[in-house]
Length: 302
Image (cartoon, rainbow, N blue to C red):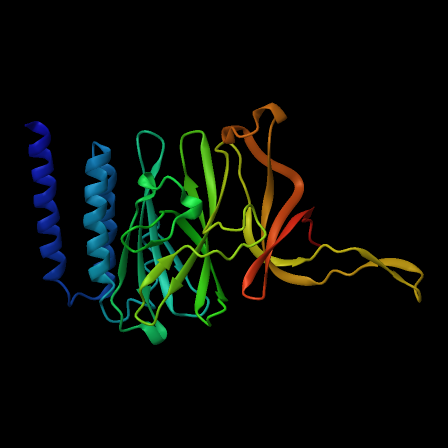
C-alpha cells in the first residue's frame, strides 16, 4: 500500500508539473531556465530508482515544452550544467542528453532532439531508452520509441548512398560499476525529422553487419574515442631524389579510438579487465558512403 501511495504522489506531481509548464508557455527563456534548473535538482531527491526515473520523465516533458519558446534553439541554457547540449555541425538539430545512475550500477538515459534551420518547424522529439531490454545491440535498429540509450558528446555528419544525410554519434555508456563503454551510433533523419538508429556502415569491422559499435572496458580506466585529423598509416615509399623512404600518409578526418586489450591474455572476454594499449589506436575513415576500418597504428600525431 505504501508503494502505491508513493507512485500516486509521483503521478500527481507529474500532472501538476506538466500543467504548470503548459500554463507558463509565454515565459521568457531566462525564467524558464531558472525553473528547469530547480526542477532538475528534484531528480536527485528521489529515494528510489523508480522515483528518480519518474521525476526525470516529468523533467523531460518540462524541457520539451520549454524548447517550444521562441529563440530556445539558439539559447545556451548554460545553468543546466548536468545536461549535455550537443549541436550538429550542419545546424539542423541540437541534442539535450542526460543520464540517471541506478543503484545496481547501470544507467538510464534521456534525450530530446530539438530541430533547427530547415527543420525548425518540427516539434522536439523525445527518445525512450530501451537499452535494458535489447539483447543484441550490435544488430538492433531503433527509433524514438526504442532507443539504445547513451550520453552523447559528438555529432559527425556523413552521407549515405541514397543521398540521405546521416550522423555518427559518439557517446559514453555506464554499463555497470565495473564496466564502462563508448559507443558509435548511427542516426538518420528523414524530411519530417523522424529519427532512425542503426545502419550497417562499418563493412570491414567484425562481421560487417554491426548497426552500432560498442567498446567495453574497465570503469577504473579511460578510453579515448574522438574525431580528429590524423595521418593515415601507409607503406613507406622510396624517394629517389632524396634517397630516403617517405610515408605516403596524408592527414584525413578519422574516428580514432584506443586499442583495448585485457590486462592478462587469460582474462580475454572479461571486459572489467580491459584497458587501452599504450600508444596504439584503431580508426575509421569515411570512403564511398561507408566507414573503412583502419587496424592498429601509432596514433601519436605531430
